[in-house]
Length: 178
Image (cartoon, rainbow, N blue to C red; front, side):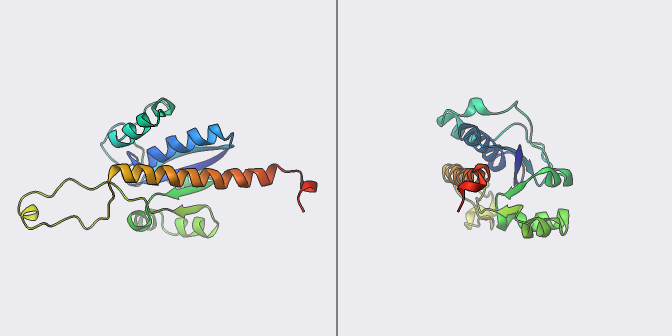
């Protein structure tokens, strides 16, 4: 069984949603891949994002959540065990990956084992005090929850399609290939 690892900041929203969607679609396509997910940072947050859960419920996929677990921070061993690592937002996470793991991300990317997507997180809470009075907003790029969930879903479906095609090529009898 091949393993894909999804990584976001806290392993609470985007990467967990990716994991559940990927595992469902892979099962439906009889793909020999399984997903897991981790976060770049330690967090005190528990469970899974309500936005991700709501999206899964709307699609009827909330029952496909593995045993409920709290977010987990990434370790070097997670990178070593994965056949493919997908980092959810290059703008947000590439520097964090380099800072935390040195040259490992660059090596994995050169081997085709690490990819970056650009699925942005949901907006942070509205600024308070003087910042809100003057309309100061966070410099971090974001996208609304519905858009982010749909973006993750589409990206995962495209990945499943790619991996399914690759699996088909491998399982064909060599004499059948021109």
